[in-house]
Amino acid sequence: MEKRYDVLIVGSGVGGLYTALSLPESLSVLVLSKKSDTLSNSNLAQGGVAAVLSFENDSFDLHINDTLIAGGQANDLDAVTVLVHEGPDEVRKIMEYGVDFDKNPDGSIQKTLEGGHSRRRIVHHKDTTGAEIVKKLLEELHRRKNITQRSNALVYNLEKVKSGFRADILLDGATPVSVFADYCVLATGGIGRAYKYTTNPSVATGDGIRLAYELGASIKNLSYVQFHPTAFNGPNREQFLISEAVRGEGAYLLNCNRERFMQRYDKRLELAPRDVVSRAIILESRKTGSNNFYLDITHRDKEYLINRFPGIYAGCLEQGIDITKDLIPIFPCQHYLMGGIDVSLESRTSVSRLYAVGECSHTGVHGKNRLASNSLLEALVFGRRAAEDIAKCVNAGFAHVAVSDKELDISGAPLPKGIRTEIRSMLQRSYFVIPDIDSARTSLKQVDRILRRLHSGKFAITPDYCEALSLATVAHIILKEVDER
Image 1 (tube, one colour):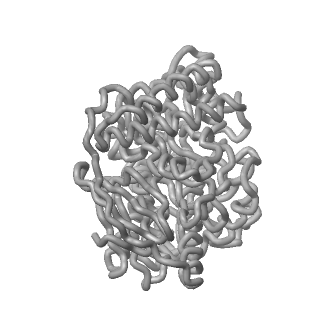
Image 2 (cartoon, one colour):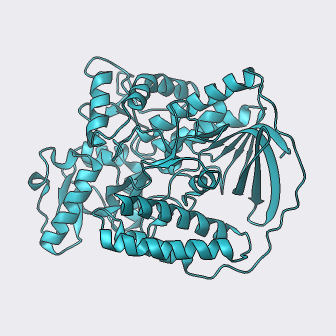
Image 3 (cartoon, helix red, strand yellow):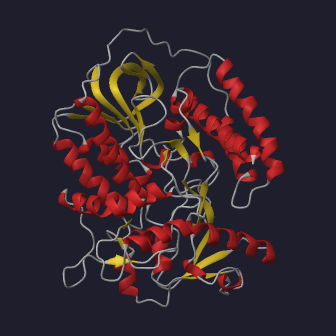
């Protein structure tokens, strides 16, 4: 790792990787992965990428309308228009990088249906689309001589310096180093670990949002949290996702009495948007007095299910469930963040030379609820837009950041145990599918006390401390928004 780069990208999900690949090869680029280069929300994405690749039975207007309906009409129409119109070209570009979408027998790209979509437009690789895209983008990344990728690198402090940024990084959880960059792109993913139960991996602690917040960047609609209605109902903190596409291919939702119930809540039944289905499950649970809910796809052909959903089939088998003949136990849990670091259509934040892409950003595309399979599309479209804007700024001849030396001190007292658990419990209790406003206000006071303690105490800078600080910051912003509604 050098001391200075033209562009620093924090995060190696689809947003970070595609931004790096879209930058001119004349620029030196550093891509940092908090842990391994494949540990990200992107890598776990099952369903696919929504894009209008053919006008035979679809249109841009239909995709835009589906997105607006799912988002409760709270979307930014300009951002949605950019997403839908430019998305197909990004899908074709990643196919050039080798991404292998499933094909029909005639060689055409196979498209599936998911909740909230009025047409089959989701292209996919089995039920592991995210992993396929990340794999192929990483392969391309490692071919580029101008790009350096470093794993186990946690950015714990980001400061604005003359003509750029200084990032203080913990390498391998213990060694502090600083790097300087003219431009910085935050692509750090979501906030799932702020909740007791989430589909997100361990790295999703909102670090980029905290770094941007500390720099004074505008954070918008962080309380727009999406809860996926069909996570596997198991004991683990990280819940196994049962993709939207399972319902798209005909699965029924059943209550504790093994009865379909969505007809009581929405005419779109199982294919209603995620927030609608999640809310219906919670209301039905109150009505029946039970949290036992199921997905039933046993009426589909066994070989079809095994071939179409190999990851879900294998994951459920590990839990003792054979989806070809058993009901799948499900319940809503935290899944995605629609708000985040507020950005322009070029992915610029309110801080000069700072960009944000992917789930940590707020483009306005998703409104109050993300339409299924629009997330990977957003990462591609706005990652490429960030890269193009940076290239324009570089060509305009902006000055380069100066490298300076500063002694890094990460010593201090050990972090008391239980802080992150306390934050998770508060958000799970007060701001789940149907918020408890009184509890949220009480939790805000508790979170603010935690934040003051983390800032004022001289704690050692460790991954645990950094993540606790990020989670507390995220919880504060969310609960403050709720309190101000």
